[in-house]
Length: 95
Length: 474
Image (cartoon, rainbow over all chains, first blue to last red; front, side, top):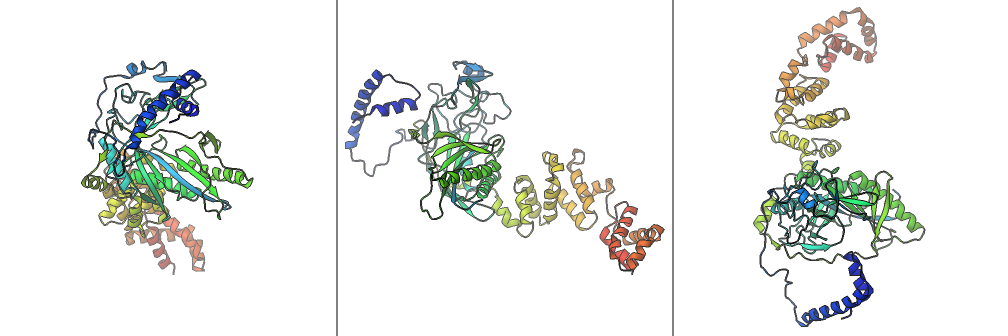
């Protein structure tokens, strides 16, 4: 089960982080091991078996449409961000 | 529009649903006029350990919206994660219904009668709002996880006008169904338009470009016209169309490339493990489906032959006016005159502010229409009374009392009218006109009627005056 360097670079860019050459080599081996392990499942015949989305067998769980006061206020939440300005989260230019 | 190429258009529309709280958290969903980041919970911030809690009302509104697009509701639906990295989404993914949407196939019928098929519609959370500056961007999370219904049409639309008509009809249906505030200026409905061109003889569709985030019917129409020009020029030169996302600027009237789809977007969809699936009963779906009120198409049928089609199309943009007409019609009272007052007086530019005032009741409007029909009020007087009914000091007043107060009741009593006519005819200033009329110059009758009207201070019924004059001048 081969994972290419390109696939790893692609995944890294989708997740918005950069990887050094050494990390890529290490990740390549790790990911290949994980996939090999998981691919054991391919040996099972699952014809006609509905996909399992969750194991709790719950359904139709929803709440009423009522506003509930929050414990965490605006400033407390904004303080969690690295930087803020005018009550907004400040981030490096993205476009 | 040039017909050298066939144009194929499909439209995705994001409708913000008017729930009280957000789709996955119990905070205020209506952030209009509120401070940035003031309607935000730890769930919206995606703090570690926070779990989404699904809003039941959003499910109900989605079903009602489905009814408003003649759609099947899928009893089984579920949520998925769509991963992308951008500061407008603290979670790093959007919760959406990629594999199993709640609303299945349906259609929207345009005023022209053409049906645009709906492929499906699904529930999802909105993203936050970014404001870009020179070296940084600011993030407001008020809009994070506002419930959206994304409505995906089939590529059945084939002109700029049709694209505009579809968006407008969809907007009307969603507003009549009362699932959204429908405030386009505030982004309550946003349109993504997919456009491709092909030669008429080609079977295969051309490569499409997607114009994102249009928020008015006019922008949709203009963007399609512009894209047709842009793509046809490329095709004329034998160049290829790039599959890409483009943005529209109202100011320049142009679309510009935003990002190419060649670096294939890879959202890594996976089932949302924190939200159990929906398996809705037939009764539940039926109950919500039946809450969908009368839609524009029904009013077109109901008012056909009563209200001229072009007048009705104008009025259909104002659900409150149409429902008032329906109320009058339900009492077996004629609506044509009231419809005319709405279209020609209330919606006239100079009276635009009246729309902010409470609308006169069905009873008031019916009485006004009857007074006009019985010629107790002239056209001008009826319009004056109509406008005054919007004033707070006249709220709830009967139009008859108001007309009396304003001294506008028209004189129909023929004895009284004849006396005025006699007085006018006795006036030497009208002598020449009388002679001209008798000599066959019937046009001067208008002048004489005018003199009588003046004498009666506008209260005489001109048609009655005209008859009396004709008799007297025989």
